[in-house]
Amino acid sequence: MIKDFNTAMSWMTLVLGAYFLIFGIIKKGSLYKNDYPKAIQGDVKKVISFISIIAGVLLLGIGLLDVFKVESLKWLNITLWVIGLIFVIGSIVYFKKRFGEYLK
Image (cartoon, rainbow, N blue to C red; front, side, top):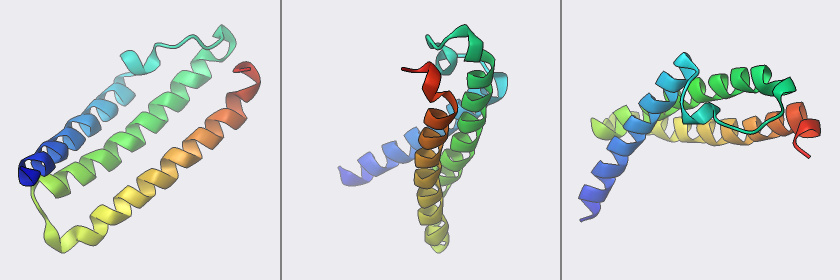
């Protein structure tokens, strides 16, 4: 049961990575539907696109390592997760500092 769950999660990570990467590049989709003020819509779209592309690359890397069970690169998998976590926290801080005055 756990093996099936891990396999499913690996594939889900891969699919999410592809989703973020593709929609980050084409700049369309549900990621861009928001109610931010028109004054910042262009800038928000650029930031969301950048964040989405980086997250997509990280998730694709993690997903590929998991799906193909590359045990010799376990350190890389852990490193990508740590980079991803730092990136998410940094993105939240950046977004709040950059657009915080518009979001109150």
